[in-house]
Picture 1: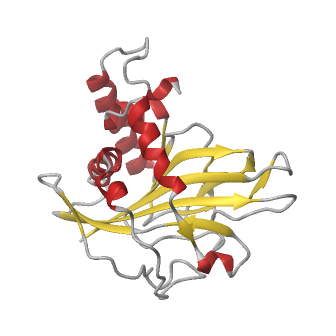
Picture 2: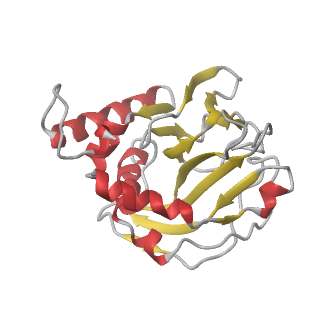
Amino acid sequence: MADLDHGTTTAADPDPVRTAAASVEAAQRDLTATGVHLMPPDAVAACTGTDRRAWERFTAHWENLSPDRYAAESGTCRLRRYGHFSLTAATGELALLPHVPFLQPQDTNPLYAQVDRHFDPLTDAFSADPILRSVIGLLGKLAACLERSARWSVKVHPFRVVAVGDGTSEPTPEGLHRDGVTLVSSLLIGRRNADGGESSVFDPDGKQVLTTTLSEPAALLLGDDRRTLHQVSPIRPVDAGRLAYRDVLVTTLTAC
């Protein structure tokens, strides 16, 4: 994973600080103009100070997720956990909040709006992971271009969607939806033996703004959730004899 080998810089710009600044500016410009931005892995690595060893430690958290019984009701095999943080904009201070059920606002998610969903909390190691904290810090900088806020409500959702045999599994069983937040993001952790999983973003009039398949670990898809809707197509195994999975970290920021 050369993009995350922080000891190797790109020929285009060997200065990671300058690369990070340019990447943040590009993301803010796109989010302001179109409501969506795809940040490539090398930019994410520069912005978060991520190297290969730290990334490998981070991805190991996806081996310790819990079944999502709500997704199972619609036929999707999904594993997940959930954590809620408060981010202070001025200082970057991040505080883990007490664990409570996850609730999405009315008129957002057609399957689960106004439904208390109970998920296992993030493990202590996950909550304290430097990459998680760096990613949230980056998202706080990006959200600032969308809305002024002294404090952000940050909700963290690590997902693994699994498909077996000749079946499919839905990363977004709710279909096209909003999350009722300011900034929504999806960081690809990894995928194995999986076909599909195409991410699509639309404006409120139904016009497609962006379509992409997150295939490189650490690719980060960002959206202004107030003026876009999103969905992800089903995944299916390339080799029906082996499990297929798609791991992502979905993180949302809402102005308090």
